[in-house]
Image 1: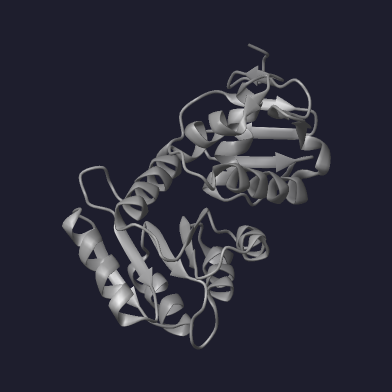
Image 2: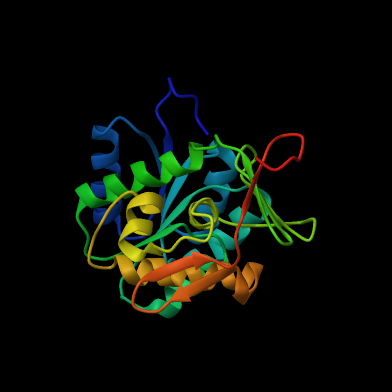
Length: 236
Protein backbone atom coordinates (compact mmCIF):
# COMPACT_ATOMS: atom_id res chain seq x y z
CA UNK A 1 0.00 0.00 0.00
CA UNK A 2 1.05 3.61 -0.41
CA UNK A 3 2.71 5.23 2.64
CA UNK A 4 0.31 7.07 4.92
CA UNK A 5 1.85 10.40 3.86
CA UNK A 6 1.21 9.71 0.16
CA UNK A 7 -2.16 9.74 -1.59
CA UNK A 8 -3.36 6.35 -2.75
CA UNK A 9 -3.11 5.60 -6.46
CA UNK A 10 -6.36 4.42 -8.05
CA UNK A 11 -6.55 2.68 -11.43
CA UNK A 12 -9.92 3.34 -13.08
CA UNK A 13 -10.79 0.83 -15.81
CA UNK A 14 -13.85 1.94 -17.78
CA UNK A 15 -14.48 1.91 -21.54
CA UNK A 16 -17.15 4.62 -21.50
CA UNK A 17 -15.13 7.82 -21.63
CA UNK A 18 -17.79 10.03 -20.00
CA UNK A 19 -18.05 7.70 -16.99
CA UNK A 20 -14.28 7.23 -16.75
CA UNK A 21 -13.67 10.99 -16.84
CA UNK A 22 -16.34 11.62 -14.20
CA UNK A 23 -14.90 9.00 -11.84
CA UNK A 24 -11.32 10.19 -12.37
CA UNK A 25 -12.29 13.83 -11.80
CA UNK A 26 -14.11 13.02 -8.57
CA UNK A 27 -11.26 10.88 -7.24
CA UNK A 28 -8.67 13.53 -8.06
CA UNK A 29 -10.80 16.10 -6.24
CA UNK A 30 -10.61 13.78 -3.21
CA UNK A 31 -6.80 13.86 -3.38
CA UNK A 32 -6.13 10.51 -5.04
CA UNK A 33 -3.67 9.90 -7.86
CA UNK A 34 -5.57 8.39 -10.79
CA UNK A 35 -4.65 6.40 -13.90
CA UNK A 36 -7.34 5.53 -16.46
CA UNK A 37 -7.48 2.49 -18.76
CA UNK A 38 -10.22 1.74 -21.29
CA UNK A 39 -9.90 -1.97 -22.12
CA UNK A 40 -8.71 -5.26 -20.65
CA UNK A 41 -5.15 -5.41 -22.06
CA UNK A 42 -4.54 -1.73 -21.24
CA UNK A 43 -5.75 -2.32 -17.68
CA UNK A 44 -3.35 -5.22 -17.08
CA UNK A 45 -0.45 -3.24 -18.55
CA UNK A 46 -1.32 -0.16 -16.46
CA UNK A 47 -1.54 -2.22 -13.25
CA UNK A 48 1.90 -3.65 -13.89
CA UNK A 49 3.33 -0.20 -14.62
CA UNK A 50 1.82 1.95 -11.85
CA UNK A 51 1.05 -0.77 -9.24
CA UNK A 52 -2.05 0.99 -7.92
CA UNK A 53 -3.36 0.72 -4.36
CA UNK A 54 -6.87 -0.05 -5.65
CA UNK A 55 -8.63 -0.73 -8.95
CA UNK A 56 -12.10 0.49 -9.90
CA UNK A 57 -12.91 -2.06 -12.59
CA UNK A 58 -15.81 -2.18 -15.04
CA UNK A 59 -17.07 -5.69 -15.71
CA UNK A 60 -17.80 -5.29 -19.43
CA UNK A 61 -14.67 -4.23 -21.31
CA UNK A 62 -13.27 -4.52 -24.84
CA UNK A 63 -10.32 -6.86 -25.36
CA UNK A 64 -11.21 -9.06 -22.41
CA UNK A 65 -13.62 -8.44 -19.58
CA UNK A 66 -13.15 -7.31 -15.99
CA UNK A 67 -13.26 -10.88 -14.69
CA UNK A 68 -10.19 -11.74 -16.78
CA UNK A 69 -8.46 -8.49 -15.77
CA UNK A 70 -9.05 -9.32 -12.11
CA UNK A 71 -7.84 -12.90 -12.59
CA UNK A 72 -4.59 -11.80 -14.26
CA UNK A 73 -3.88 -9.02 -11.78
CA UNK A 74 -4.56 -11.11 -8.67
CA UNK A 75 -2.44 -13.91 -10.13
CA UNK A 76 0.76 -12.01 -9.46
CA UNK A 77 -0.15 -9.35 -6.86
CA UNK A 78 -2.95 -8.84 -4.36
CA UNK A 79 -4.66 -5.54 -4.99
CA UNK A 80 -8.10 -4.41 -3.78
CA UNK A 81 -10.72 -4.28 -6.55
CA UNK A 82 -14.13 -2.60 -6.66
CA UNK A 83 -16.01 -4.00 -9.65
CA UNK A 84 -18.65 -2.02 -11.56
CA UNK A 85 -21.48 -3.86 -13.27
CA UNK A 86 -24.40 -2.63 -15.37
CA UNK A 87 -26.79 -5.24 -13.95
CA UNK A 88 -27.62 -6.42 -10.46
CA UNK A 89 -26.70 -10.06 -11.05
CA UNK A 90 -25.47 -12.20 -8.17
CA UNK A 91 -23.82 -14.59 -10.64
CA UNK A 92 -21.51 -11.78 -11.74
CA UNK A 93 -20.78 -11.01 -8.10
CA UNK A 94 -19.91 -14.60 -7.23
CA UNK A 95 -17.65 -14.99 -10.27
CA UNK A 96 -15.95 -11.70 -9.43
CA UNK A 97 -15.41 -12.73 -5.82
CA UNK A 98 -13.90 -15.97 -7.03
CA UNK A 99 -11.17 -14.12 -8.93
CA UNK A 100 -10.45 -11.55 -6.22
CA UNK A 101 -12.93 -8.64 -6.32
CA UNK A 102 -13.56 -7.02 -2.93
CA UNK A 103 -16.73 -5.05 -3.55
CA UNK A 104 -19.35 -4.41 -6.23
CA UNK A 105 -21.36 -1.41 -7.35
CA UNK A 106 -24.24 -1.48 -9.82
CA UNK A 107 -24.53 1.33 -12.38
CA UNK A 108 -25.79 3.98 -12.06
CA UNK A 109 -24.15 4.80 -8.74
CA UNK A 110 -23.42 7.84 -6.64
CA UNK A 111 -19.84 9.21 -6.91
CA UNK A 112 -20.05 9.95 -3.18
CA UNK A 113 -20.84 6.31 -2.47
CA UNK A 114 -17.96 5.15 -4.68
CA UNK A 115 -15.56 7.34 -2.71
CA UNK A 116 -16.93 5.93 0.55
CA UNK A 117 -16.46 2.37 -0.72
CA UNK A 118 -12.89 3.14 -1.84
CA UNK A 119 -12.00 4.57 1.56
CA UNK A 120 -13.50 1.55 3.33
CA UNK A 121 -11.65 -0.96 1.14
CA UNK A 122 -8.34 0.87 1.54
CA UNK A 123 -8.79 0.95 5.33
CA UNK A 124 -9.41 -2.78 5.38
CA UNK A 125 -6.37 -3.48 3.22
CA UNK A 126 -4.13 -1.48 5.58
CA UNK A 127 -5.47 -2.98 8.82
CA UNK A 128 -3.05 -5.63 10.14
CA UNK A 129 -2.83 -5.43 13.95
CA UNK A 130 -3.96 -8.10 16.40
CA UNK A 131 -3.04 -11.57 17.65
CA UNK A 132 -3.19 -14.74 15.58
CA UNK A 133 -6.29 -16.94 15.66
CA UNK A 134 -6.70 -20.68 15.29
CA UNK A 135 -9.76 -22.85 14.75
CA UNK A 136 -9.20 -26.48 13.87
CA UNK A 137 -7.13 -26.59 10.69
CA UNK A 138 -7.60 -22.85 10.09
CA UNK A 139 -4.92 -20.35 11.13
CA UNK A 140 -5.44 -16.59 10.75
CA UNK A 141 -2.47 -14.22 10.96
CA UNK A 142 -3.58 -10.54 11.03
CA UNK A 143 0.02 -9.29 10.74
CA UNK A 144 0.58 -10.93 7.36
CA UNK A 145 -3.13 -11.05 6.53
CA UNK A 146 -2.64 -14.70 5.67
CA UNK A 147 -5.03 -17.61 6.22
CA UNK A 148 -3.78 -21.18 6.07
CA UNK A 149 -5.82 -24.37 5.86
CA UNK A 150 -3.97 -27.46 7.12
CA UNK A 151 -0.74 -25.51 6.74
CA UNK A 152 -1.39 -24.43 3.14
CA UNK A 153 -1.94 -20.74 2.33
CA UNK A 154 -5.39 -19.87 0.95
CA UNK A 155 -5.80 -16.78 -1.20
CA UNK A 156 -8.48 -14.52 0.25
CA UNK A 157 -9.33 -11.02 -0.87
CA UNK A 158 -8.89 -8.26 1.75
CA UNK A 159 -12.65 -8.25 2.30
CA UNK A 160 -12.84 -12.02 2.66
CA UNK A 161 -9.97 -11.95 5.13
CA UNK A 162 -11.68 -9.34 7.29
CA UNK A 163 -14.96 -11.25 7.17
CA UNK A 164 -13.24 -14.43 8.41
CA UNK A 165 -11.26 -12.52 11.01
CA UNK A 166 -14.33 -10.68 12.37
CA UNK A 167 -16.27 -13.92 12.75
CA UNK A 168 -13.28 -15.71 14.32
CA UNK A 169 -12.72 -12.92 16.84
CA UNK A 170 -16.36 -13.26 17.92
CA UNK A 171 -15.26 -16.64 19.33
CA UNK A 172 -18.39 -18.53 18.33
CA UNK A 173 -20.73 -15.58 18.87
CA UNK A 174 -23.31 -14.70 16.26
CA UNK A 175 -22.92 -11.53 14.18
CA UNK A 176 -25.86 -10.16 12.24
CA UNK A 177 -25.51 -9.14 8.62
CA UNK A 178 -25.82 -5.48 9.62
CA UNK A 179 -23.03 -5.90 12.19
CA UNK A 180 -20.79 -7.56 9.61
CA UNK A 181 -21.58 -4.89 7.03
CA UNK A 182 -20.53 -2.17 9.49
CA UNK A 183 -17.47 -4.05 10.82
CA UNK A 184 -16.10 -5.34 7.53
CA UNK A 185 -17.39 -3.01 4.83
CA UNK A 186 -17.67 0.14 6.91
CA UNK A 187 -21.00 1.21 5.47
CA UNK A 188 -24.71 0.36 5.40
CA UNK A 189 -26.96 0.24 2.37
CA UNK A 190 -29.88 -1.69 0.93
CA UNK A 191 -27.67 -4.24 -0.86
CA UNK A 192 -25.80 -5.07 2.34
CA UNK A 193 -27.37 -8.45 3.20
CA UNK A 194 -26.76 -9.78 -0.33
CA UNK A 195 -23.20 -8.49 -0.26
CA UNK A 196 -22.51 -10.31 3.02
CA UNK A 197 -24.19 -13.52 1.84
CA UNK A 198 -22.22 -13.58 -1.41
CA UNK A 199 -18.90 -13.15 0.40
CA UNK A 200 -19.82 -15.89 2.87
CA UNK A 201 -20.47 -18.27 -0.04
CA UNK A 202 -17.12 -17.34 -1.59
CA UNK A 203 -15.27 -18.00 1.68
CA UNK A 204 -17.00 -21.36 2.07
CA UNK A 205 -15.83 -22.40 -1.38
CA UNK A 206 -12.26 -21.64 -0.41
CA UNK A 207 -12.17 -22.86 3.19
CA UNK A 208 -15.01 -25.39 3.37
CA UNK A 209 -18.73 -25.21 4.09
CA UNK A 210 -18.25 -25.76 7.82
CA UNK A 211 -16.07 -22.66 8.31
CA UNK A 212 -19.08 -20.32 8.71
CA UNK A 213 -22.36 -21.38 10.28
CA UNK A 214 -25.66 -19.79 9.22
CA UNK A 215 -27.84 -18.91 12.18
CA UNK A 216 -31.21 -18.66 10.46
CA UNK A 217 -33.04 -15.42 11.09
CA UNK A 218 -30.02 -13.93 12.89
CA UNK A 219 -26.74 -13.98 10.97
CA UNK A 220 -23.48 -15.91 10.90
CA UNK A 221 -20.99 -17.46 13.32
CA UNK A 222 -17.56 -19.01 12.93
CA UNK A 223 -17.78 -22.76 12.43
CA UNK A 224 -16.25 -23.65 15.78
CA UNK A 225 -14.84 -21.77 18.75
CA UNK A 226 -11.62 -20.00 17.87
CA UNK A 227 -8.56 -19.59 20.07
CA UNK A 228 -6.44 -16.46 20.33
CA UNK A 229 -2.75 -17.38 20.38
CA UNK A 230 0.31 -15.32 21.13
CA UNK A 231 3.43 -15.16 18.96
CA UNK A 232 4.91 -18.20 20.71
CA UNK A 233 1.85 -20.29 19.87
CA UNK A 234 0.49 -20.38 23.40
CA UNK A 235 -3.23 -19.93 24.05
CA UNK A 236 -4.19 -16.52 25.41
